[in-house]
Length: 175
Image 1 (cartoon, helix red, strand yellow):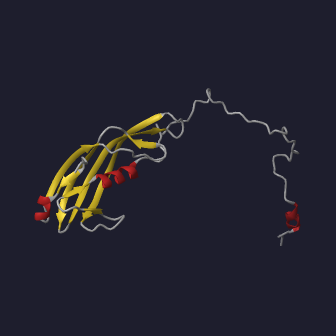
Image 2 (image 1 turned 180 degrees about the horizontal axis):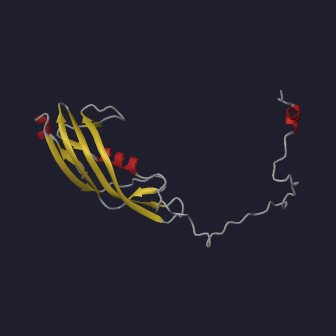
Image 3 (image 1 turned 135 degrees about the vertical axis):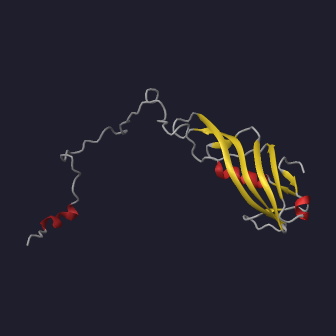
C-alpha cells in the first residue's frame, strides 16, 4: 500500500451499510491532455465510502490545480480543477464500469486519475475575452502567389454565372 489513495476497508466489509468519510492528499503524476496538464501540487480527495454487500461505493470530489497554454494567445494559464467522483468498487470488477476491491483495502488512484483526466480542459482559455496575440506584434499580411496576382475580370460584385444553367433563364412562370 504505497499510494496516498489506498484506504482500508476491513471495517466497512464487516458492517454493510456503514459509511466512512475519507480525505486524502497526494500526488497524481504524469496526467496531461493536449494543451493542459495537472499541476505538480498534490490533489485532494474528499469522499464517502459506503459498504453495500460485497461492493463499496465511493462518492465525493477530487480537487487539484491545472496548468496549460491558452488556445488563442498561447500564454500560460491555469486554475483549480474540481471533479465529481462517483464509482463502484467490487471484488470482480467489470472493465470500464467498476474498479477492483481488494480484501481489506481499496485503491482510489485509478478512479481519481480518470475523474481528473475527464475534467481537464481540452482547449483552455486564459479568459473568455481573450482576443489572441497582439495585432501590433503579429500583423496580418497577405502574401501574393509566386506567379503574382491573377487579374480577374470585374463582374460588378456578382460571381460569374455557370453557363450550364443558362437555359433556366429562359423559363417564365407568368400566367
